Length: 202
Image (cartoon, rainbow, N blue to C red; front, side, top):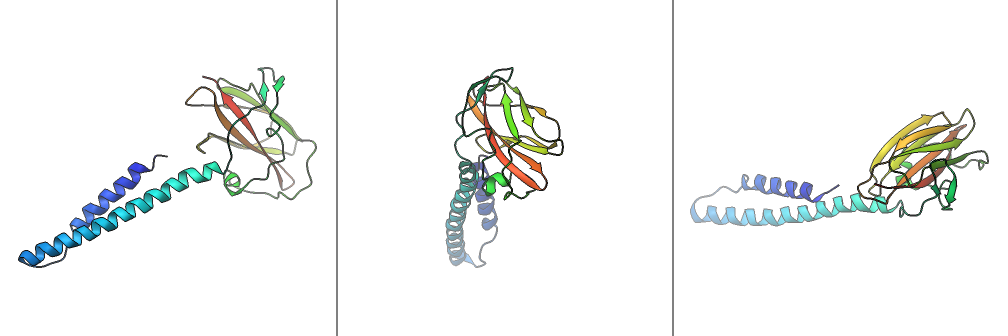
């Protein structure tokens, strides 16, 4: 999100408002009071603008950095055959922070026994747009997915998937951009968390 136009607009509106609220008086005294008042308010307006711009900038950037760098992929061809592996991807070993948990509407228990019967992978990776996410799970298990870009924009959001495979479409602004798919397996009130990176070829 580009926060600079928002902060500038608020600053301009604030200046316009204070010009209509000036001290009362007559002659030279009135003009001096008006000038001094507006000058002081302009200083306050500028300080407000700088503080608000700093706040918005920190909100739009810092949180996304907490998700880590989107780099490295597990390569698979269009048949799902493994070509190369990123050991950090497509596991259930994640321990999500507050920002990652906030991608989802609800939370479940995470202090559960490790699951040995869940697996997940995506193919083709890299993809030109369409890709499949393949799951190995029990019938009672449901899957939630969030596909996001490196600016934390949610590209796709899916809940309560019961099938063993699900198709998604990846979009990117440049060739070689890496997106991240956050997923969780939900079973017996527990969630098992992980992520995998997807590279988009244009």
